[in-house]
Length: 136
Image (cartoon, rainbow, N blue to C red; front, side, top):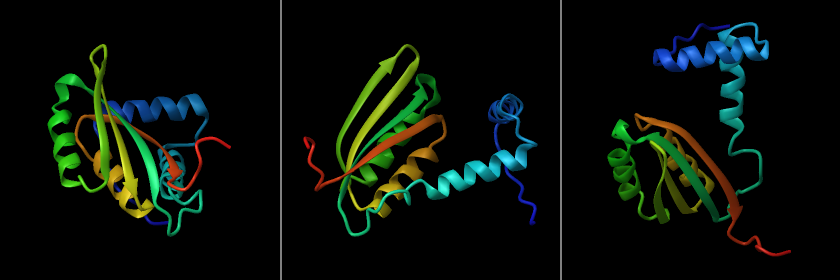
């Protein structure tokens, strides 16, 4: 098996080590492999091929991190996808909510760009196909 080197901040590495200990993983490699599998399968779990989808994305970041400016730049660079954007506060944590519409590939790329912003601690989302009815 090839060896891969990964860089991460000390705080994230400490969280990973605590997670490994708390959940009985044999080591960092096992936890990173499982996380990678989950990340790769993330947009493949449902059949969205050829469908327009609507996605609500929630990002969290510390108010003092500077992430708000970078998130705004990502949003403006993807204005063809973003139909709505709301900024909110929860104590010293900021929440940036995005509603986006497009293909799964385009939205997956957008989510990846949001995750790459320095200071962003969480990116979560939910997807609906544009042809799904809200009421059964």
